[in-house]
Image (cartoon, rainbow, N blue to C red; front, side, top):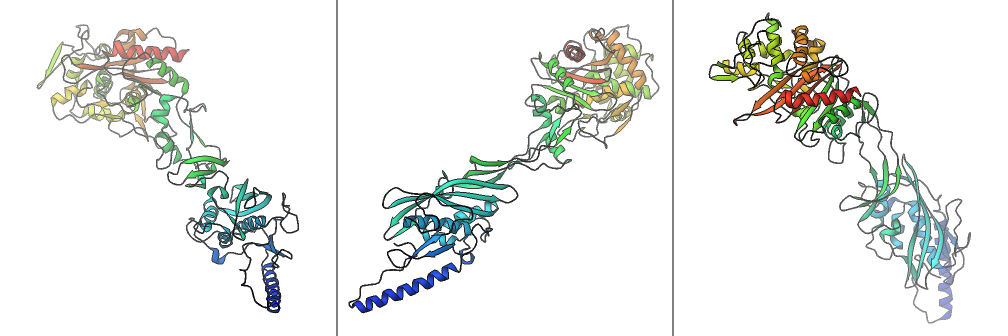
Length: 598
């Protein structure tokens, strides 16, 4: 009986006496080898020592122990067989005789291979394979490093011979992964007789069943998706398409950081321990082929936002009938907390947050506040001619807004008379409207910690620019979010920086003329350009329409606005290419408030 450790045969000797002497000498040498091997026996299943290197399977065979073996007497070659010791508590089955020599020499080779694996003796494993090009230190040592293995047991089970020269040694392996736990699986060591000995026909599947060339076992950490974002009542925002795309943002992924509120929230709360998986990985692409075992991570942390999904749904319903681009923003009157950010369409530019347009006549709230701060009041006399020329700029009223009945500031505001406000602004200091706009949050940078646009009201460089500024045209720009905060500040008397997360550093300050503006904005609904909102259920509605011209066409293209509040909810509705605030934006707000009241 021969195996991989059998001494080479000696050439025949011509004399019988010399031949007998040689046999005796061989027995003595074999006994010495057996004694030496038995002295190296150590407890199988000992802690695995990873090879040196960076986890690429660099061999450490020179410092690793040899496989555990037991010398036993017997065998046809007079040298004895080397029988691998089974791990404690494991009794090999099949054709192997417990406690005795193998019934087939191939089993000894298979079990020696398993014992060497268990001991981390890659050199001994290398000595047993058929093809010397198979790098066992890289294959098995790399496994130890990649998986952070602390222990390996490889228990032989059934030995099966498929012919005189082919066999396989089945085994059960248990891999102990540091900080995670054990993974067990059943595999086989393929064996073949080559000459007078048996060799392991190593393939990738010898290491793990089904593993193909170019694949590896590896630990994969799932990216931490970041905190789950909830509305103010504790309901997840991810279920809302609009909010998911335009507010919540994308979770972090390999090579890609989180975006939107996910990024902001992740910086304020501890990261959750991600789930980890033992997986089959394509070594070239890094793609996961299959998952062997998954260890769940910590539950995702949660962060509450100021969004109210009931208000968000009402806003989305209000925009559902719009054929073109539109947006509706709702904020809490007394805190600046954002309750809804609705966009149509939901993809592309998030108009509610990042749209920047001339606010048109809704900006007359700012111009009126500047006039009130300079001593004017709702009853201050004004004129509303059909046109007014300032420098080189001639400004006309929107059709239907020019009327002799407009004789006071309140009436001009309710009827949205352009010429009255241009004339009013010309009596104020050049910086008055600009300075007042800053008190309503203009020119203070992005309002939210994510991509967002506020308002811009540059200081006019001449009288023509001053005239355009007075009616929200020219270089004046604002987002729906900005204009919703303007309406809220009139209702409360204080401008609160809008926010969607808890914001202890957000700014706030009183705004001028709030009491008078409340009277004037209520008159817009009762006697002005938004009378269709006068009979809505619930608290009284107050607001201001706006029609903003843009482009160079004739007639000019227009956007439509309506900003205001009802009860504790302030809002701004914007309709791209809307004919007028009254015709396009007011109906959106009516649908919103009716949906909110249900």
